[in-house]
Image 1 (cartoon, rainbow over the protein chains, first blue to last red):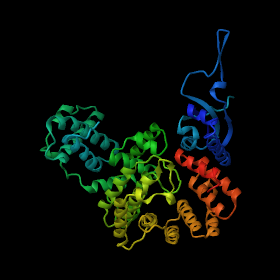
Image 2 (image 1 turned 90 degrees about the vertical axis):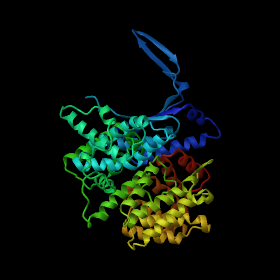
Image 3 (image 1 turned 120 degrees about the vertical axis):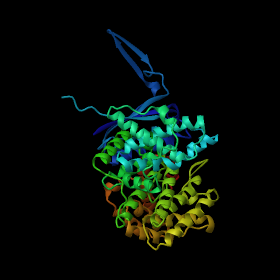
Image 4 (image 1 turned 180 degrees about the horizontal axis):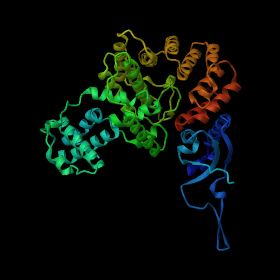
Length: 118
Length: 413
């Protein structure tokens, strides 16, 4: 079964990315997580995202396109990375979600992927 | 919610601790429906909260609860068959003189039989511990779900389904015959160990530290020793949990995770250590060695550093060899390999790890921690680094991850 692991990172996680004291450990944790997914042969896609400040949000309402500088909602946690994995069941997907570095301070969402559209 | 500050609430809490499982087992013995039994006993306790607070603790709490649980069960059965039910106010007015329902009062054997039902060979082994925790100790399904890392609703469904199976497949209350007893006790002990939150011989290594129901598991282990006092393995499990528990305060300090070898032994609990040692001696007196006694002995060797200042790694190696003979497991192999590195036998350690099936270790964090150590001891630093990275990626506990990342950054394994 295909699942998406959505790593919702906390503000502190984004701060660690550029903090000289914490950046090395931050990136080492993610590199190890991605390597473990890869070496286990279950990962079909992965994307790490630039911080929420780099987001641009669009809405199309009745032909008027509204463009907003920044993320779509003002929340404490923002999507920081996406992983698509293929594992037997939800239990296995949850075990991988629990290992995700974002789970320590942010949250990690697990969602089954829709079957391909015919 | 029970607040423990007045005698009534103390009595309620104590009755819940002591009698919940016994009453569930007793009702299950009568009609073979585990869910109905649990619901009825929970209802009885809910009524007790109101009634005892209003009218004081009855002379025999057990008899009061027995009557209330029995009535709740009858009332629920009637509701299921659309008959008139007993009103709650009728129940709270009851006294223990309703001995028409005695039919043999609940006994400790009711708890033991209930444990055997929960760890029945016909039930998926992964559900043994959740069933026990719910039926015997009334642990909330959501807490159980958190420990076993499944969504609460999923855990609830799994438990409901298995209870329907118990009812409909005719898994009934009975004491296993003498020749089956050790095996059935073994299943109960394994489930208690799983509830404790580690099924790994590398319990003190950076093998994560998932949330667990440690207090509950310890209570179940103590119950088992009381219920089957002649079973050395039950005492072995209790000794193992006591030793592990005695060192727990030292695992996480101000600065994060502290591995066993670096732990300050003054932080370990001497009281629990002595209890663990005493339990292990009692187990040994039966002269029948088993898996849990060996694991407890390994744990005791580690604990002994508090008194001797050193770890007898040769003894650890010997004990692991014994464990691998009678109960081979991935965890025991990893433990043996780690101990072999300590006595300088790195080649055998590497051979042992290489013999493990790849599918069993692919996502098993302790294996990669151990492999990193073995490879580093053999001077193969590239392989050690790769294994360490894999271990970090497989780590669940953020404190353990931070520790491993720090070690890795310093080039240590």
